[in-house]
Image (cartoon, rainbow, N blue to C red):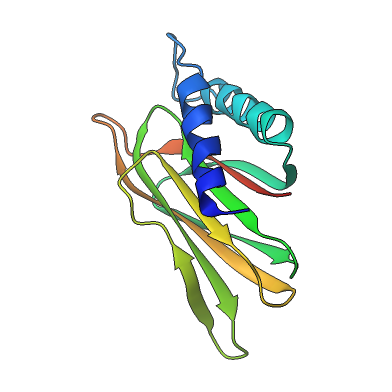
Length: 149
């Protein structure tokens, strides 16, 4: 599988993601409804297996960790709610002394997508960064979905 297939997943998912009229800063409804749309597209339209999901609130950055296995190409997809304007993701491996950047997204979008193909099974650090918010906001919800064939 190539990154172009993952890009197709994101384009389709974003075009179908719901946009709801009533939004409140204390509700996770918007991000949960987006996640539901993305889950259906990833699992049923593209027949990918979701191996990790996370939804949380973010003001600047968050870190999460996951073992990724060799022999798979993983899609790492991060998306924001209506408050987030620019969300990025960085993926690191540990070389025994420090975390080393393996892949990063630098596009200016409310989502980020990376493809990672581990050379060996090991733990990865995934850093989600909220670079900017839509006017009037300084915090928002994000979703993380890690998947493979």
